[in-house]
Length: 118
Image 1 (cartoon, rainbow, N blue to C red):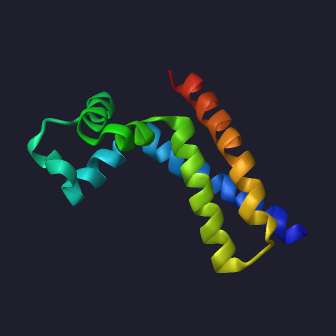
Image 2: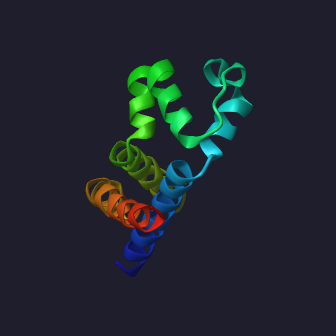
Image 3: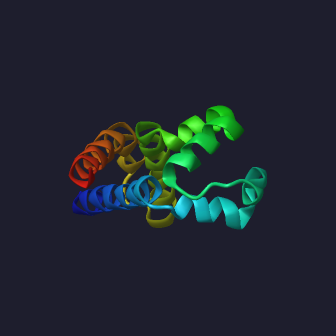
């Protein structure tokens, strides 16, 4: 069971890191421009705010999911949970418990950092 808790908290760190990088930096802009998703190279997207507007206009519901912190943490949680389970097989509980708890914890960390940042 100790292994479960290690992977549980490790998963929280992974999800929080992804959330922080996605929501606080311009990294998503660089990723989208590198992959040239929906011709973003030809648009004038340079700031985080412009990128969020571009997401909502050009990607619709997917754009909303990518710009919503709680949605992002939910999907990141189940994806990371699956990856950790299939790579390391720590416990079957790692498939279910994190999906229900990580999004809230990651969102709390995000909210705390956002409050400090602004």
